[in-house]
Image (cartoon, rainbow, N blue to C red):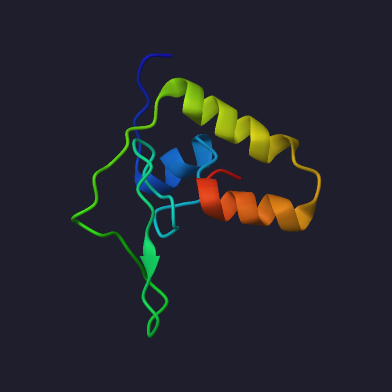
Length: 84
């Protein structure tokens, strides 16, 4: 498959990403969001230099999360990587 289109919830579900309001919501880069303390929304700093995800990084992160058997560890990895 060369191209996949859809709205954000559909793409998140099809790519096993955690969604657009998560710490690692971008499917193209490694940008990490910051939680605002008063309203619990995730914001993304605009002055950050973004590291683009490549195919191998994406596959390796998804495999690591998928193979984890400890639920606590898997939840932590999901928050850190954006994959579930």
